[in-house]
Length: 258
Ligand code: CAA
Image 1 (tube, helix red, strand yellow):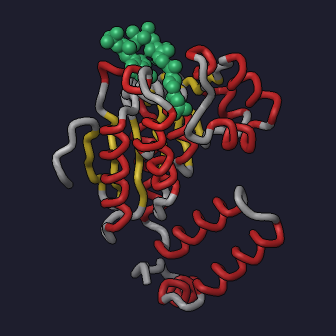
Image 2 (cartoon, protein in one colour; image 1 turned 90 degrees about the horizontal axis):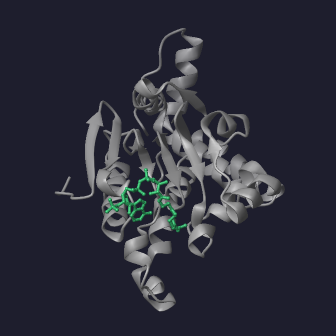
Image 3 (cartoon, helix red, strand yellow; image 1 turned 90 degrees about the vertical axis):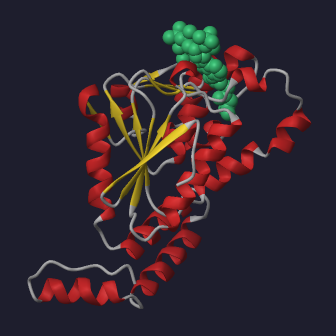
């Protein structure tokens, strides 16, 4: 991995971990940080030794959102030219599963970054919010769309129009996060979950992620057709033969990722 200033990267077995590392700025997502994050995720995505990724912040803040100081004087054209939305889109195009390990504030673009991930493990202190309305704008990295699909219109309206925060237990109740654990263990729990997924058949994991994400884009008929093609495709893999033989022979399968 290259030298980064705004993030730290580590590997834990087959899991690639990215720590957002601007603690003094509550991990505000300036362009430099987003570029480094994308670069690190892409490197892990291309590495056969990695099966899943975790993104985390600090205990106090996963991320307080886009960097307001960097954005304050920008014009619409500046923002278009900086290509921020391309960056978000490219993160959502990462093929391996990404787990957000969220503690403290996940606000604005920080909440949207967590929503771009495939699973969320939250600490009891996590708070999700879209406070853009308090600074005269609206979410710009998917919040209005992804929150509405997950939470429904009523709660999404409150969050986006009236700065309503969701605490960890509410986020769990509404299906925004997978699990809530004590603050001491949220990162370990996320790494454990990522490790379990990373140990599964890699091509099936990739196609499973792709198929579920298609549910947000396609009609039911198109989504079912896409799922069926992916299912058939898996029968061309060695891992399908291995998985089913291992079941019949009552042994543990050994995955090749082919
Ligand atoms: N951008 C830039 N700097 C930020 C920041 C942000 N989003 N959030 C916090 N910081 C900085 C603060 O300016 C402060 O820096 P200084 O010490 O240099 O003054 C430092 O982080 C610590 O923050 P606070 O002193 O405010 O800490 P707090 O504990 O009192 O409050 C907070 C924490 C509630 C997260 C508060 O900082 C806050 O409300 N932050 C802004 C949240 C926000 O509005 N996010 C939306 C951004 S817009 C967006 O994300 C658009 C999009 O959809 C892509």
